[in-house]
Image 1 (cartoon, rainbow, N blue to C red):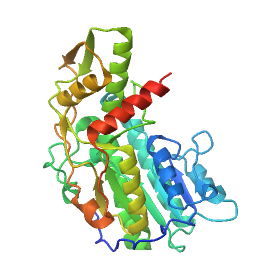
Image 2: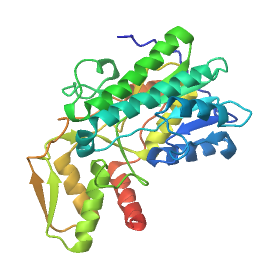
Image 3: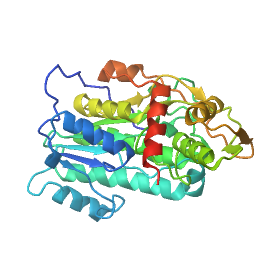
Length: 337
């Protein structure tokens, strides 16, 4: 195992963002998290034409030649200064159980090609930065709570999402190795479960909050008397509003120059039982909740220690949980087809 190099970052002084004027590739930039990251880049003074968002129909990030072409063509005669790798293939417990091989391959291949071709394209010589989003699925199944970054190797991840989590953790180690051998500047963040506007509400692949919101809203609209929910409700989770996560990612790209892992979370946990009851209340569903204990609960607990993010990034979540849920439910009601 490659040990993590010590951080050499410093907080930026008040003034223009160091990202202003940079050319930035944002993988996954058209997705849930990426939309919010793009808006924050624009607010930081990054020009629209300096943000390249590769689309899946044009660029297959799991393909070596396709990634090489991305770096050549992203900005015509200019080169990228920053890469924000947000793209992932991921889903909830059901999707992870159905696609363990695909999720490992896709996430490993994307990171491997993007990091290596950033090196080949001269990102290191230009003093550029590569940011990799990780996942708390990389933490051990029975990790001490709250999860601390220094304990990420202290056990095997929860089985249903281990392939995804291990692939993301391997990308971190690749960045660490490239820092040691080539001097690549990078940053690595581990966002907790995200939620908010533009989330994935597909019941086959969505995470718990969007899935529950959709189920509750549709059940209310149909006048259902029962809401079926997986598991026992005993597991706990932590959730971070997507806008807060976007800000944390931008801060990491601004100030970090090595892949010291940094948790991005809200600093609280809630049981799935209490989460379901809260979404039921906020959505207005009046029926009964029917738990299915034959379905898996997933990792028993998830809650992050976020002191490192506050210390190194000057970042802390701002949106309260109930307020964030209200915004997300309202967005889904307005945009559901």
